[in-house]
Amino acid sequence: MTQAVLDEVLGEVRGRTGLVTLNRPKALNALSLDMIRALTTVLLAWERDPAVEAVAIRGTSRDAHNPTGASPFGAFCAGGDIRFFHEAAVRGDPRLEDFFTEEYALNHLVHRFPKPWVVFMDGIVMGGGMGIAGHGGAASLRLATERTKMAMPETNIGFFPDVGGGWFLSRCPGAVGGYLALTGQVIGGADAKASALADGVVPSAELAELWSALAQGGANAVNVMRERFAVQGEPENSPLASHRAQIDRFFCLPTVPAIVAALQAHDSDFARETVAVLRKRSPLMLHVVHEQLRRAAGLTLADALRMERDMVRNCFHLRPGAASETVEGIRALAVDKDQSPKWNPARIEDVTPDMVAPFFRSPWPMHAHPLRDLR
Image (cartoon, rainbow, N blue to C red; front, top):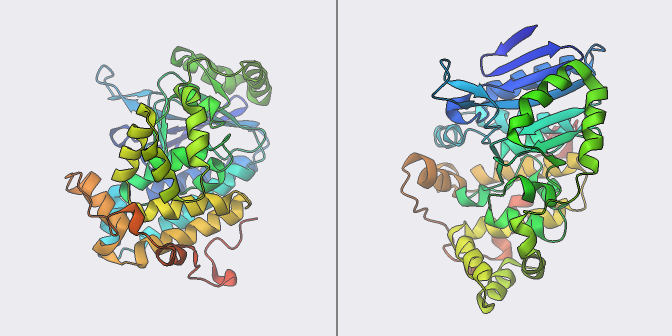
C-alpha cells in the first residue's frame, strides 16, 4: 500500500520492505524541511514495525517522455535547498535553524537504523543526498551506477561538507576525502566505490529489477545483494585511481597553503587543474574544512554532527545576513548567477588561524545543544 506522507516523499510497504521515493524531480529531489520531516516520520514508524525487515530509498527524475513528467531512478538527491538557505538567512527566518537541526538528526537516525538500509544512488548524489546515503550502519548497502554524479561541493558556496561529511570523508582511503572535501570534485560510480562511498556499482538498467527483488525478499534479498557486491572487487575504470599517488602526496599536507604551494610547484596537468579549482573556492572555508576533517577523524558521528551544527550556526551568524561567506557563495551561484563570489579574505594565503577558530566554538552549552540527545 502506497502512503503519500508528503507529495515529495512517497512511502510504501511492499512485501517485507519499506520503500521510499523522493519525488521532487524538478528540483533534483533537493531536500526541504517538510521532506526531512516526512522522511523522519516514515523511518521512525518503520523502525518499530516488525513487518518491515528492510528499507530502500531512491529518487525520481524528470522525464519528458513520461506523461507524469517523472520516472523512477536517474536522480537521487541534489542536497539541501540552497535558495531557501539564502532567503532564510537574509530574512532571519527561524526555519533555517530547524532545517539543519532536523536534517542532522535524520542523518543520525539513518546511521543507527536497526534494519538494512539500501540506497539507490543513481544520478546526482550531492550534499544532503550524501547524508541520507552515506550513514547506514553495518547492514546498509549503497548502490551506485554508471550515471552516478557524486560530490560534496560546499566550498563552492562558501560552506563546508556537512550532514556528517567530515566524518565519512575523513574515513575515505588515503587523502581522497580531503581532496573531495576541498575541491568539491564530482565523481562517478566507479570512483565512489574506490573511495568507500559506495558498496557496489550496478548498471542502471538493473535498478528496477533490484528494487522489485527487495520488495519481495526483505532482509534475505539484501543479504543476497550484499554477497554479490562483496565479490565485485575494485572497479577498473576509476579515474581517481590514476591520480591516487598525487592526491595522497598533496592532500596529506598539514595546511591548505602547503597543499596549494606543493601543487603549484608540481609540473603535471592534475596539479595545475586542481590548484585552479582551489583558487575558485572560498579561501576561508577551505581552511575551515581542512580543520573540520582533522577533527572529525577522531569523533563519533554524533559528536561530528554536533560540531557541524555549531559550524552551521557560525557560518550564518559570525557574519550575519549578506555578509556571510555562505550567503555570498549561494548568491553568486544560484541567485544572481554571476559566478563571481566576493570572498573575504580573497586569497588562501590571507586566512589566519584566528579567522578559522571561531567556527568551532559552540554557541550553546552542552545541556542546551540542539543535538544533545544524539548518542
